[in-house]
Image (cartoon, rainbow over all chains, first blue to last red; front, side):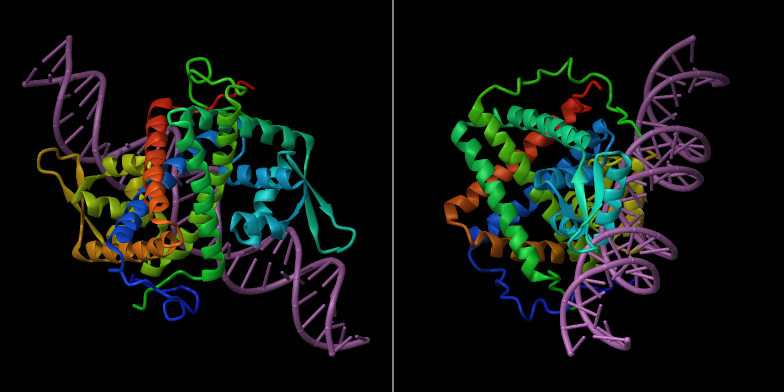
Length: 179
Length: 179
DNA sequence: AATAGTAGTTGGCATATACAACTATTAATA
DNA sequence: TATTAATAGTTGTATATGCCAACTACTATT
């Protein structure tokens, strides 16, 4: 199978691409960050696969539940947006949570097309328990670091996530390949 | 479906679990880190889903290819270990890469059971191109940050990944639920 | 009133992943 | 040495994830 290119329209020609040579220090940082992040992703995915099952829900369901619980209520489209998923996927993830009694679907009175996802009591409670578990684990992990470093970590990770989110939302397809 | 518990044996009772109350600042850091990391994971997964296809390979295949290329050669088990996946999954991911001509399988002479995965020239070349793309993107992203922050980010992410990896390897099941 | 747009669901498909069972090979042991 | 146990990898099976496209049911526009 030839390496087919399916990226969306408008990328390398429209984006200001940095020359690879640029600043050597920057280049090195970028290299290291790339490696570190891919390692981080893999290990966290693994951890989450293993963990979420403790409460009988999947990783995606866990994220969705958390989103809805924190928002109080959410449409399917909003959920899809928050999870960076197609609305069909969001709808099915919601299905799973509704089946388990953790979310309820409620038609909107204003707009008959809209479905509001509402957390049930059990959904809220399970979400809180999961959060607590996570918190305990993160606290344990963070306690290895000096206090200043600790708070720097969280701020930087947040900032990083934010930067990626902004980048993903604007960039459309990030594919810079032409063959 | 009742929330079934399927965690492995030996968790909350054998692990030194921090009391949730502990240090308030630590607790808050943990909370923030939890939120920031889950956002980071989601957005990166999204980005990767969209990107890897540029070279006709999937996200997992990309990680696997990178691992093998960097190591020069790797057994299926080693690959599974590095990716935190079951060996069957690793084997199938390798299948995909072999089908695409990016990896080759070679039986080990020392031990007839072992299969060495070897990158082909094309595999190596594609991997390098992907790495370069990533690097450019990361450089672009990092250029938003001050130089000191920049290098701090990469070091912290690396350290974080390392901590998680250590934790995942020792902790077995991280499930701290009893009902 | 007819047309266009939007929210959500469902169908179809491909990939991802785990676990269990299997094959082939090597190591241990009786 | 012959048998048993262990190991590396593959394959079977089942489920989850996720996209796109087609569909339904509403709402907005003209």
